[in-house]
Length: 364
View 1 (cartoon, rainbow, N blue to C red):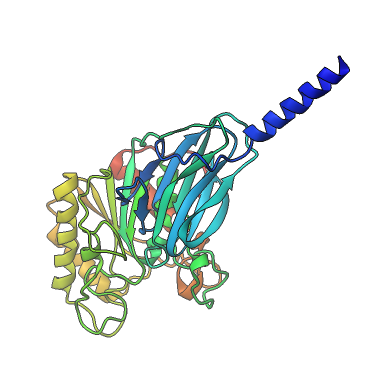
View 2 (cartoon, one colour):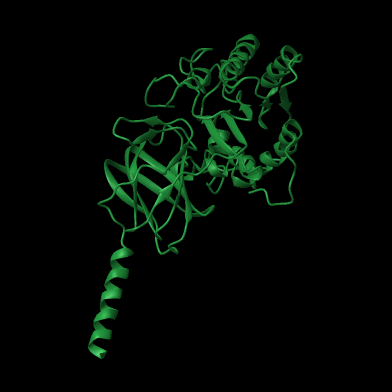
């Protein structure tokens, strides 16, 4: 009898060990939800490069791995049950498995895998997911609220994890999740998309030798991929409740600058572009905290041109809240604390525009 009990215990232990191992013979694609602009490939894989794109799934089995390939090098944030687990470096052109979480209870858990870096840093393909034997996946429903942000390095979280303003930018210090757009979306429990790229202007990109850059943010905003192709975007992946636009810092950043007419003209074209697909969506035009007199003049003219449109709003920054020595990361861009301050100035305005109640919770 003791011998049978011993054999039964060994068998149960073996089955438990076998069941708790990631099953890389079963690649799962159904049950994953993608948010943002992504390319669905013929083989079922999904490719993207825009900052902030995220994939979610509710999975069981206690562990999950992703089968992924990366044409460049990117950084992704891994969340389990809405808690940041770690930030991973993704590289390797051939599909390979990356373990995202293990040792969880075998009940349902939610994964969110979010691209932390912008299009210049990463051209990522997800081929599917692996679970423990017996595990399952199901898609995550879209939230009621959705915010899309059109922006530049401030939106991308450029250098937000750097230690000081004097530190030069490195891709691993960029994290859109710690920038104002994602902070605002978290506060209002909204899904989001970031249509943003560092150094871009709505007319002229940073340091460009002429008044008009050939691939500025107006051009990029109509594309499915940010950096790696010119496929037109059909604007069907999501429909935002609110659009934020934070562009202009790079347009007027160096000696050559666009005219006020060029700036306001392209800005109005961007609003027309999004509304031609999203309908009469509310638009909040953000004045960057670092705006200089020429940009302020251009935004004042934009306000005059749109004053009859009651669904176009303007956000003014609080003066001198981003402080030297405290609120700057790489290359004098806002660090996480600076980004939180920016978000705190915008949250009441978003609340007023959308009728979304303020809540007694942390802004993080």
